[in-house]
Amino acid sequence: MIGRKKKPDGVLTPVVERPRAVAPDVNPERRDVSRFSHGSRVPGWDDAVDLERDPAQVPDLATTPVPAELRTEIESHMAKYPDFHSAAIPALAAAQRHHGWCSPDAVWQAACVMRLTPGYLISVASFYDMLETRPVGRHSIYVCTNISCSLCGADELYERLQKETAADPDFNVRSFECLGACDIAPMASVDGVYVGPIALSEVPTLVEQVREGIPPLPNKQLRLRKSTDPGAAHAVPGGANPSPPTSYGAPMGGEVTGPPAAIEEPPPEEES
Image (tube, rainbow, N blue to C red):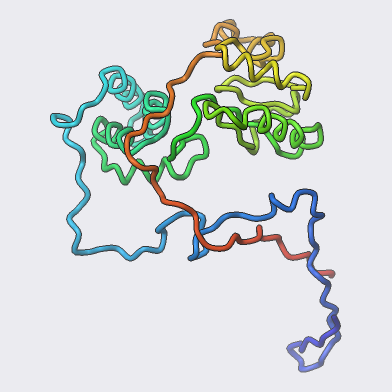
């Protein structure tokens, strides 16, 4: 499209408007981002503050049942930081390992030990991808689908893992960007253990090993590579059985409603 642009001196000069570049439709399903009706991917971000509402309360440790091992772990994380608020992420991770997800009870217990309001911890849990705010399978497989892994077949690996575990509620399989292990692409984090490169033919074996509590593809685990750290190979092995998700309360955040919004693409650079 050709238009005219007025310069400060009043002279009109022709301007060519180029059409916006559109990425190729490799996978149309991945070009949409689910959003709420108000346009955000986070529920309630624009809710007005209720000034008449009582201030949020910190749960009372005397009346809140907190598992002893969970309390000990959270307190040990708090002791590592000058400001105990910095322990929010490891505290939530500990609560998630105990309950299977960051359930309302899990958040309440963590808030009780940390002497914070549950709302403070919910704001943290809802921000980070690896903190689950709704029940998921106890075995988490994160497939890296960033550029390096995608070029090496990560999309096909992700689809194959989804099909292999589709009927098993014990698995939480999803794509992830980026796991930072480009040298073993395509790879995945299997219950926290980096494994790769994973061939499509190895997917059934990997899934069966996880089901049986066997370290997945031990010859391809990143932790078993030679390292200058003498304790690296003696870390907790993969294939452990994480706790199954609990059913304490409803998932936080509600369901996503409203039409999906296309991922925003940057405008093309103007020609000089």
